[in-house]
Length: 453
Image 1 (cartoon, rainbow, N blue to C red):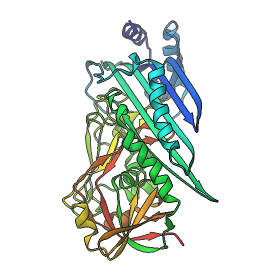
Image 2 (spheres, rainbow, N blue to C red):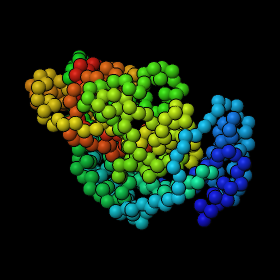
Image 3 (cartoon, rainbow, N blue to C red):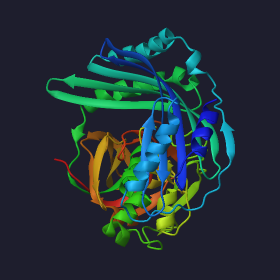
Image 4 (cartoon, helix red, strand yellow):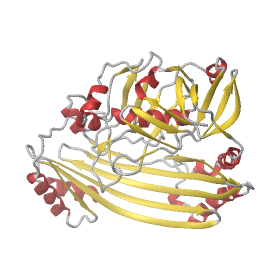
């Protein structure tokens, strides 16, 4: 019935190109803060967006929450597009068809009683509070089931179900004036089953927060650094991935000078991809929010920049192929160029081989924040360990890595054989949090500058 409403309104459009995206979203959230149950909510939301293009003018947008007056919203988008004065916009060709993708869930979270979900989250929260020095916690659960219906004037007719369930745990430990935090979680598109078995994850979070109380701040200096998959994945997403998004490159002369296809960024062992087809990952769907099939896009191959990420608009503007990377946080926003699952491909080294010849270095783990400015970056690891004479030694904290992206990529001299994709990735570009995958094997970087005592 929804599809028929959209098709009827689409047929009446006066624009040169029109698309309509409708989303029906059910979200449940449960949050414990310490021993207090802070949030229990289930929200139903339905809405959509019309995007219209008039040649020689520009885009017009109109959002809606009811299908009753959709014809008016389509005409409103046309009228908005008709008065825009902008550079000419064209859209690259893409293959469109009719498709219906239904989710297959191991345990359908929509059918589970709310009390059962609350009991599960509460149990993990109590596990954190059992650690004597843990003084505060946050245990956050969310499940979301989105049905996206999409039509456009070039023949696309798509219905895609997009489920996601997640749990994230944070523990805060305190001893005298020393306060330390640790966190970890899991998100899955496969259903609810994996969330039943996170006891080890909860224990690891509580123990890590406790252990950080006795960790020394790393001594500042220049070190060989081995990054774990979490930190390396966030690094490649934040420091490199955003520079690969074509809307940024197209509008930024400095980025155009940096991101020249064919430029060597690293040694032949470095390969980076964005892949929206990986089964079960955070950034995976069959179609993006322009109805374009998602795909695997090589970004760096054997150290050389070979590709970038596109919407239909940026692909046409730069005379390149579409990549299926037009994504929107919700129906309240038009699609923009965003990553799906971005990762460093595995190499051939084991972790033991990577640390074996390091006399003094740092093993940096997890990522709790960072900032980038074009090619310069600074990232804070959640924790780390000193490497002494080829062996892991004492835990250290306040591990902050900084440097130049291109120099750092050139200094990657070993890549592990243990690719791991993030279970909790979110990207905030422009529209707020959007699920993405980040990933990497362990990587070793020579000559990394590190702040500290």
